[in-house]
Image (cartoon, rainbow, N blue to C red; front, side, top):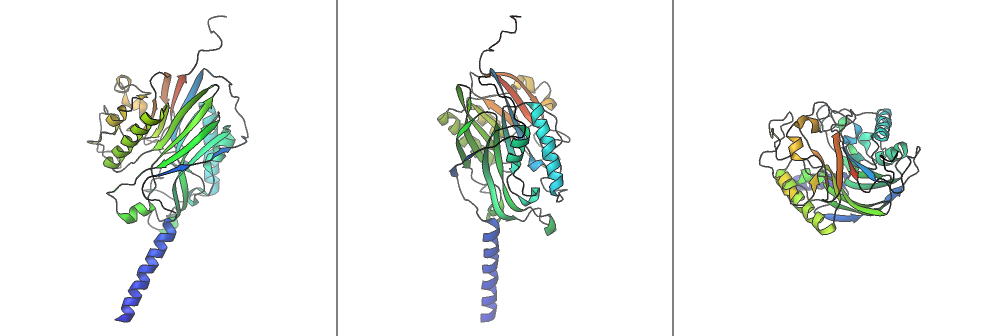
Amino acid sequence: MKMLLWTTLILIAGVIGILSWASYPWSLGKTVKLSSITDVEPKDMIDIEEHPSVIKLLTFNLGFVYGEGSEGPGYETKDKEYFIKRLDQLSEELKGWGADIVFLQEIDFASSRSASINQAEYLARRAGYPYVAEAVSWDANYIPFPYWPLSRNFGHMLSGGAILSRYPLSDHEVTLLNKPASSPWWYNLFYLHRYFQKVTVEVGNKKFNVINLHLEAFDKDNRMDQIRDLVQKIKDEDIDFVAGDFNMLPTSAAKRSKFFNDDDYENDQSFDLMTESGLLEVVPDEIYVKDESLFFTFPAWAPDRRLDYIFYKTGHKMMKAEVLPSALSDHLPLRASFQIDSPRINPYSQ
């Protein structure tokens, strides 16, 4: 009897030890971290206007540039050559898109699943962005997903969001959000944090407070709580732009359930709650309802919904917004242009 008891205790201690090591360092509840900003030396520096009249913002959930299968089903491990090739392709796309501030989600900094490459710094150097702010939201010694076989496990994880900028960044702050209370404790132990990443961008003689984010995908109540927190933050901290993967549908979306991956957005009030922030969205509803498909961002290979957004403060002049083509992620990127000053050259004076 004593032997059985000791054996049981040893097994329990072993399981606790393995879980503690694998999930370390996990974080419970909300945490605010003041994070550093990296200045890199780009391989190909893009010419930067000292006092631009227009700035372009781009948001893109990269899915660690894996492509179709990054969420689990169909996932197979890839070698370093695979990721280098795709990062080089994305660097060229970023150059062509010409964004001044790039908001990235699901980007890896040193993860086994993507050959331990710091994707943010790699892209910044190759695409010509001298300023990088990284938001670590998923940090664990070992992620046992996809579950089987073990050879497919993600393993060591260091991932989150990043902002690449042509202009100087300051006052970088990362807020890690609560995980879904409805999920089992052992699931949340390894589950990523959703987050707000706030930074100030100095463009010429102007400063803009911007937020990059990635909100909850699978728990509507948790996502709506995150939106409420976001709305309060926007009101308290005078935010100019918010961009990222909101994992919500526009209120006017014609289809809200029975998607290919069983996602269900019925009774989700996230978008309505976001309107209480006072910010405007770059695709007005009257434009969106004319042809929703023009603005679908997920999944990239057969888009059937919009999950990615850019919101801006009233008073900023939005010029154009568009979803761009790319085959490097499970999402598509969204770009928007804003006039922030009068043109220095009168185009009608010639």
